[in-house]
Length: 363
Image (cartoon, rainbow, N blue to C red; front, top):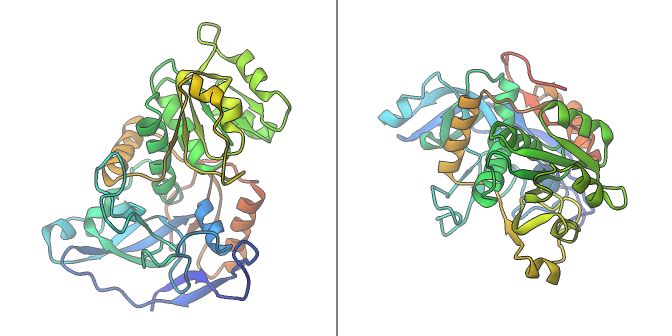
């Protein structure tokens, strides 16, 4: 029987509990006509997985494999031509279902069902095998290792929508600020924006992370913990363009307060997460300057395909901070969660499964 990692229920209130990891066996999947079975070679963590362990994520449940990011090999298919064409191919998995191509949001009345650890979707990638519809696959870019391929789907999709669809400012010469550099989404947004010819600036609480971001193409960065960081950022903006066109934010907090002083009139704050605070102020000064705050979460199947094509064309690679190997290695997998809790990672945290292939990018 295939194995998977899930969370074990223990007493505790949401936000106070921290569910332990548990290895379980799952049923060997049998694909329907349009489905495939993917033998997972790599799975990657996201902040939602940490929130699930703290029971802070909607629909948190038990007995469902964790994680939504994954890559693998198609080892079994249904009888339809659409399914059979994937046999033996190396693939990455669209991390959710229910959202085809609408720019506004999921078309399904049930909403977007993300894989891993909730009641909305029985699949998860921290498992030896995953059953899903063949239509949710993309061929893994050849230049990516298994760890890098596993690190791409959710992070790449979230960054793509926040930067391209929602900000509308991923254009050559535009000034883009990425907050909280070091996380997977911010780093993919950095990669995308640099490839588009944007001038990219970053914030971090860590000088070393800013240094690494500059190695990846960032034009500069500031420590957000320092008083008046927004003034320091304005000083390093290009002389001919002393404003930001957009902010891609995953922190929340005072981003509107600080960002209004930096953005052009009509500038965009594209928010994909709120790791610092679950709410933020919207000031009259932002109203007077026509600043827009746009929520952005995940993305459609079409955006996923567009993102993967861009990665292939530009030969881009996700940054992998650290990997551990094997579903038996629960202590080491727990260590990846600790990295995320402590915000010590620079890039994605990945569990490789099976034999694997190649190495990952590191800084």
